[in-house]
Each structure stands twice: as structure tokens, then as C-alpha cells.
Image (cartoon, rainbow, N blue to C red; front, side, top):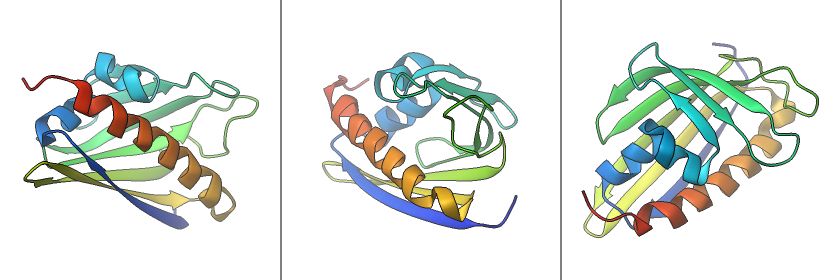
Length: 143
């Protein structure tokens, strides 16, 4: 992985860790908060998200680690398209940790290997989609 900037964000979600986990590993649930997705949730499996907003860039990555209901790690980058951030596929790394609480879960996102020039833009992007996740996940009935 390249060196660079790291951002970290935390959001509390009124949902069980299992529910939030599925919002990263199931393409139908992932599409509810991030974008149309292709997901192969196993180490080395692809994660592709087609954004609905702006220049409609496509994020491409691969899952690195999956610890059910606790941790997800994947590489992160964008297809080279007009308007897409200049982060090549696989050039950065996203770590998601889920810490259960009595009435929900605290999700911590750590995105490392970012170009320093894209730290603010990437942080704003994650803030936007994580807020959507926090809105969508609680509406799902417990399974």
C-alpha cells in the first residue's frame, strides 16, 4: 500500500452488528446507502460500487479481511473516468470495525493510503454515505 493520508470517522447506528455487516456484504443492502454494487464477500473477492451522484464514478476494490460482525477490510480506488478522484483501484485501504453497544453499534472507518490532496474530499464523501447508512440500517427488521 502506498503511504499518504489517513482519515478516521465514527458513527453510531441503531442496529445490530449483524445488520450493519450485511449492509457491506450484501449488494441489495449496500445499494440502499452507497450505490449499485457487485460484492464477493471473501478475501480476494471483488467489491465494485457504481455511484449515483456527481460524475457517477465507479469504486473498485477487493476484500482483504472479513471477521463476521466485527471487521471488514477492503482496498479502495476509482476507475479512471472524468470527474473521478485520482485514487487508482487498490491504492488505498478501508478498515471498518463494529463495536456493539446495548442499543446499537459504533462503526469506525479508517481509510489509509490517500493522496494528501484528496483527504478532505474523501472525508466528506464518507461522512455523506455513512450518514445514509445510519439512516437505512435501523429501518431493516432484525433477522
